[in-house]
Amino acid sequence: MNEAIQGGAGVACCVIAVMAAIPLLWLIATYNRFARLGQLVKESWSGVDVELKRRHSLVPNLVETVKGYAQHEREALEMVITARAKAMDAGDILRERVDGEADLGRSLGRLIAVAERYPQLKADRGFLELQRELSLTEDRIAASRRFYNANVREVNALRIEFPSNLVAGVFGFGEERFFELEDASERAAPQVKI
Image (tube, rainbow, N blue to C red; front, side, top):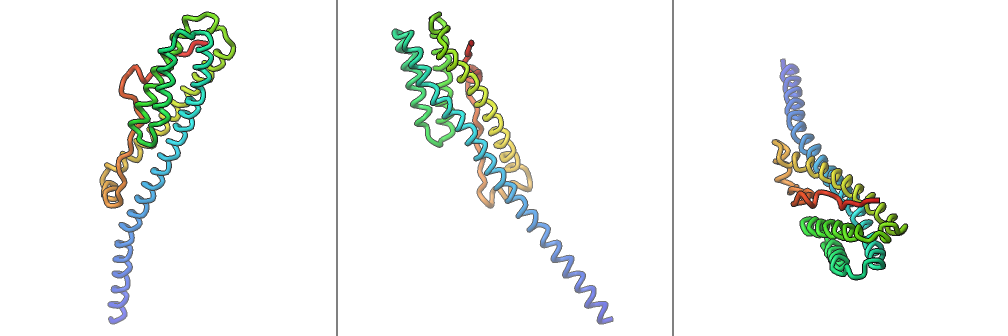
C-alpha cells in the first residue's frame, strides 16, 4: 500500500511538472517567434534600403544628363536634387524616410515628363540607359517594400493575437510600421518610357 501511495505521488509530480513545463515551453517558443520575426523585419528593411540607395545613386547621373539638354528646366532639376537630399537625410525614422522617398518619386516623375519635351534627350543612349535602370530600380523597390510589409504584417498580427499579445506586452515587442505611401499618386512608380 505504501508503494502504491509513493507511485501515485510520483505520477502526480510528473503530471505537475509536465503541466508547469507546457506554459514555459509555449512562452519560450512565442518569444523566439517574435525575435525571429523581428530579425526578418530588419532584414527585409535592409533590402528596401539597398534599393533606395541604388535609386539615390542613379539620380545625379540622370540630373546631369537632363541638364545637358534642358538647361533652362532648372526648377525640375533642383526639385529632384532637393528631394534626393531630403530622402538621403531622413535617417532611420520610417515616416520621414517614406515622406522623403515619396517626394523623390514625384520629382523624378516630373523630371521624366520634362525630358519627354526634348527629342534629342529622349534619343540619348545614356539617358535611355538611366531610364531603364531607374525603371528596374523602381520595380525592385516595390518588390522589397512588399516583402518588408509582409513581415511587418506577420509580426504585428502576432503582437495583437491572444495569447501571444501577453508575451508581446511583457517583453516589449512593439508595433512595427508599414512602409506605405499616403497618396494614391505616390503609389505609382515614375513613368519611364524607353
